[in-house]
Length: 232
Ligand code: FPP
Image 1: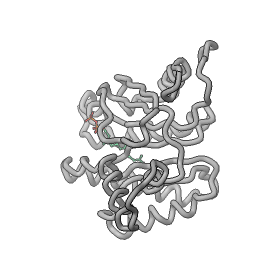
Image 2 (image 1 turned 90 degrees about the vertical axis):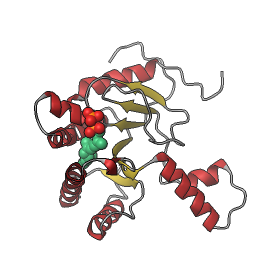
Image 3 (image 1 turned 30 degrees about the horizontal axis):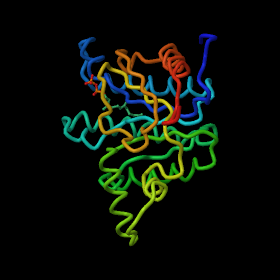
Image 4 (image 1 turned 30 degrees about the vertical axis):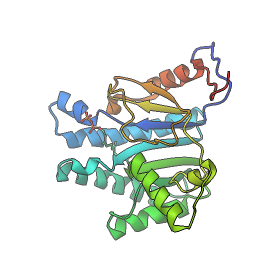
């Protein structure tokens, strides 16, 4: 990393929009499913490298509320990959060092998957680092669910803190940096409330090709930014 790092505050939380799996597969004449499989490998590499860099929290956008529109076979592949990853985490729970937290509405998931998600959230609760997995997540959906929870609690007038406490990310830090791979320059309904002061980094690199060198480049770009949080 370059020596002329200028940013004031350490980078604690990176959120990733893991885009480009389908195109990566297509370029190789492979079915889209293969792109997601290699996407999981990239995700694991990213987690390791973030740990090496001392990043406390990693958030990944694994499946959005809109991704149900994809062909059923593709949805099934992504869910199976997730199930497999979670089953492996559970098997190696003693070595696993991240607190897994799910962002998104768990209610559409079948009981077995939902139970495993909830079990892992509890089993990893004392781990030192945080992994937020956004699964069936949409920023608008999260905000509407928060509004409904506040209404149901009888709230009539809420503060920003009350609202933040009704979100899936309750009690957790906002992302410092949001990285999107795959070349598109948009937020796609990700962390709409939480991104208020995030820095954005976009790269054309497709997610399965995203690795340590690309993370270093994103981190270096972050440290060159001046974050003022509305001040001067
Ligand atoms: C976007 O690429 C990627 C997704 C919608 C799914 C991402 C999911 C994974 C990497 C697996 C999740 C599992 C774990 C364990 C984290 P795209 O398919 O939209 O790519 P394209 O834009 O090239 O079509």
